[in-house]
Image (cartoon, rainbow, N blue to C red):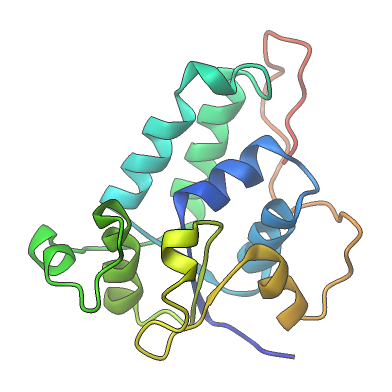
Length: 168
């Protein structure tokens, strides 16, 4: 069993966690929030909030619950300052330059692992000795059960206007 202390999640994994309760990304996030420090930067949080605002996700989860998820991630993450110049100097860089912000964050926070669902990041495993793992492999490193477990998030303080309920 591996004990990671600092964990970085990419946007695609966090979006999947928000939209699919009980999924491997959701369970990986819940486990990391309960056992480690989830690390973020202003740019990674801004990207998460921007992506979660996309109308295409309305059919999975209403906008209010997606915004609540982003707020929970913001409040539960350890925030690191990552200057744009550091992101521009990431070596080796990702083949998708937009993903360099996650690598720069890994370096800035001295992360133990990057959890990603993005092939452009996964191909770099390991990046400068830091493992880049899918959510399922991250869970397997802890030997977590594959059955869904409730996440450590509190229930929303008020009911959303739609019939959807908060998955966290």
